[in-house]
Image (cartoon, rainbow over all chains, first blue to last red; front, side, top):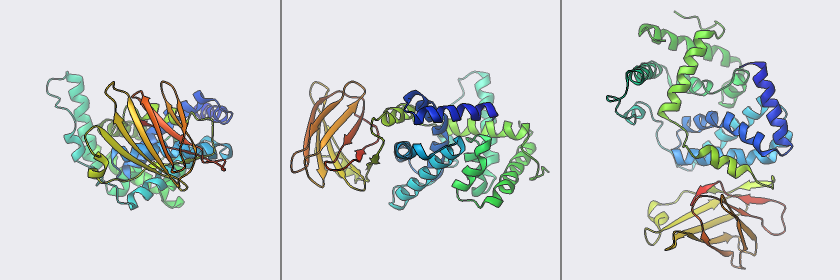
Length: 187
Length: 155
């Protein structure tokens, strides 16, 4: 994440506030992958997660004039996505967070080229390392992985972690993951 | 052992990129999601209230026959129930019912062309010969400045 990128986001935000749909569309492209992970990490099924993420963007329309920085924009969207997810979850529409099950959905790789096989093996090893982490670390790293660096703290806060613990928790989780990967001589 | 206090370095960034790739692969966004969001937010009105799909019993959602879908959207001020039925020519007939009842302007935005109507005193409305594709129902309850909108749905 470079200042340049931050500057570009600020430009898009201002243009979107002035009613330029294309700029708003670029912000949708930029931030929706993060919001999708936030919704899915809350254990929502795919249809509900889609609904929730759309809802967050629609709600943003009314609040857009009061949001002045890209960091505030990210924080606002993550907070609303999480709040909406909680509301739906409490209404009883959820599935269990998927873990190992997810990999059973991957297609059979045997007939694919060597490069794809290697990429898949690396993913599976990374997955195994991620699964050695506790739930809190898995959740945090899943979200951080989709977040630009200036947003780390606000995103962590939006996920309900005390401000003082964000840096240390992130550091602890990343360190654990690296050690697990070192054991496998990966990456 | 890796120190947890170390600042994020190139290898951390590499690991995080790997994680992003991992989660994007095992749990990708639906391919239509970005287009649906862009379609939904391209609204003239920004003072919107979002009516979200409510939970329905599967048996109820299925309707009388396999050709019809029943969807309920809830917001703070309005409930929109719609029944969707496919016509023989492949177009869609949408029967809607607004609660609280009343005569309200109703608009169906689609990626082809928009259709509008007004609900009757009982809150009922019909939109027929709708082309399949992305669609969003927008209701402007009379006497308010707020616009109630559904998310984009696929017809």
